[in-house]
Image 1 (cartoon, rainbow over the protein chains, first blue to last red):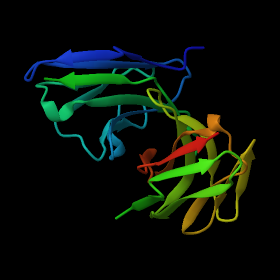
Image 2 (cartoon, rainbow over the protein chains, first blue to last red):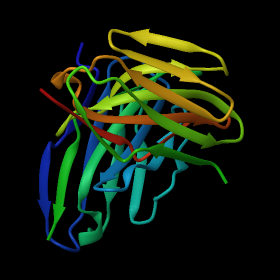
Image 3 (cartoon, rainbow over the protein chains, first blue to last red):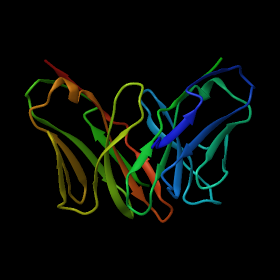
Image 4 (cartoon, chains in turn orange, brown):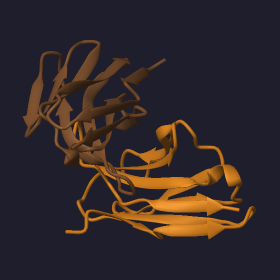
Length: 112
Length: 110
């Protein structure tokens, strides 16, 4: 049982490049989330998807887009990367009402 | 506006020295409060969920409690392996939105 899998684990981008962070969960969870984590800022919600076919903005959505491809997969796209997007990105999924979220191991992204 | 504050930001304890971490909140429509542990370079790991004031949960040396305004994570006789960042998070609204506090970085010295 893999849980939540994120790819890639590490990535270096040049300013202006685009990329997609992939996330897949095998727990049949309805809700999925993308967070970024920066020193002194904690985990900040970028986008979330309460169920297949729906997405909503979190605290810091600017510069990102998401796709809930199916129930298992939730991708995060950076169309034109900026140094301010250097961060560790975490994907999470949640089973249903009032239950805990399970996290992937993170993607460490550096934009130079 | 929903707000959650964790304190202290950092805590250094001697092995065996019990203490408490605090998560105070003003969240409308709170449906659940979570505690997570995060080790360096890893994703957060779930510890507890609390749903209503007065609720308590325990796991090994950790005990989480919830009042109407705050939650505490009590650590009894901590060991060096308890060193980590402890995060509280809350579930609110009708759309499964989970928001995290900044965390408390705990260091337990042998």
